[in-house]
Amino acid sequence: MLDERCWLSPEWSAVLDFALGLELEATADGRIAAALWDLVAAGADGLGWFTTVLAGAGIRGVSTLPTSMSEVADALWKLHAAGFVSATSLAELLATTDLVDPSDVVSVVLAARRDISDQAVWEALAWCGEQGRIMLASSISAVSEAHGAAAALYQVDPPAAVAALRRRLRKSLPVSPADAIVLAALDEPDVESILQRYNQQPGFKPLACLLGWTRREVGRKALRAGLQAADARIRLGAASGLAASYGNDIDRDNFDALAALARSDPDENIRLRIRSKLNVVGMSVPWVEAALAHIVGDLYRPADTHALDTRDSSKSWGGV
Image 1: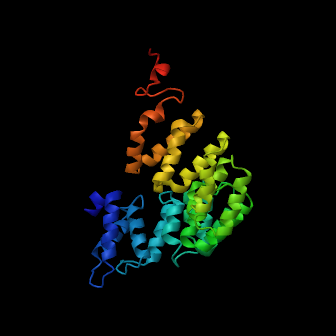
Image 2: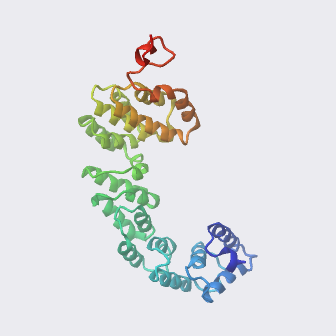
Image 3: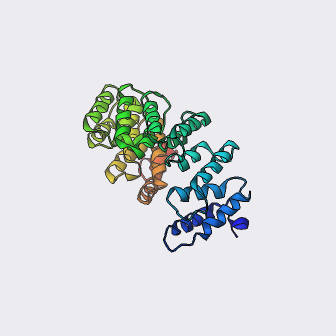
């Protein structure tokens, strides 16, 4: 059954992982791990699928493996060299063990990257021990397209991630939504610094989003005030920052504030942008979807056109 039905089947991966976990029990006989290794040793695992399942179980301490973890590690290295196991998977499976030198895995991960902004690269480096974390912190502080690097480091070393992001902010390097979790962990002085920058350039949307991602009330208050600005760029930035700050956690008051702009802002581009943002939230939040449906006529009607159920409708629709 393992050979004919389970190989390369994502559904069976979770089943086998669970079964191997059960073999951690002292009463287990290890027959599942033994069967998997027999398939690997017999050359029946051409793409390395069974090998990676075994490696994941071995890292968690399954003591019933019929061979040493070093042999499994050797098999993974061969599969990687053949192109069947990615560098990021290799890092996740081996870099936290004592079977390899983490610096070797770091070199493999960096050599294999095709796009420096690929978040999978940063997540793989996070697995690579101290050297990987040092590489991540350095990249956060200096690499312009390090999208997601701070979030990856935050999963293994939150203080180091916050410190590295603080250095990035001091250099005014861009911060992406992928690192919002780290922005929300900044200290109050850091947030005040972002707020000061926003107050100096309230029409700069990236700064408004940056302030929003901190999820602090002092920033949200400034963004709500920006919704009333005469400058369309400031209104759009403030709306974008509020949408970024709340995401799917938006409350009724802030929904109403954004919906008011989406319905009646004199700038058509702002109405369209905010409507799109609210529609995205509505896809995941039922009450937002229902609230948007209730005002759908206002959202999609041109700003200079009156609703059909108003006394002024004839002015817009050519009635008498």
